[in-house]
Image 1: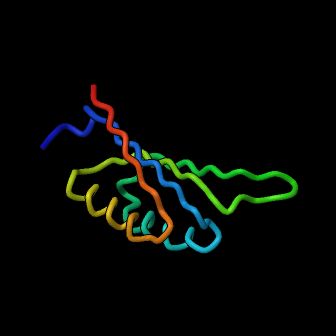
Image 2: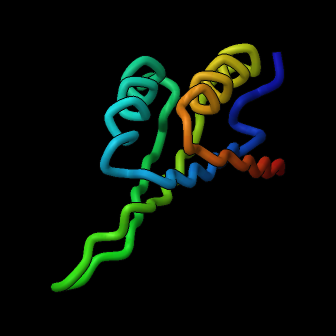
Length: 89
């Protein structure tokens, strides 16, 4: 198995209807919680509006088969766009 310390996997998750789909996405995050090293949620807000869209960045830790299941579970949530960055050193 490849040494997991030799790579960083970042998943960018764009959610287009945060108010109705965030709960489904949170269930996926809970299911794969041991593989989430870092999680950062971003959305636009001010005194007048709270954006219906959002962006979540995940730093993933785990093996490739689990990553594939995690990615598929995310894609199964309607209104989600998923992008992946892999950095090796």
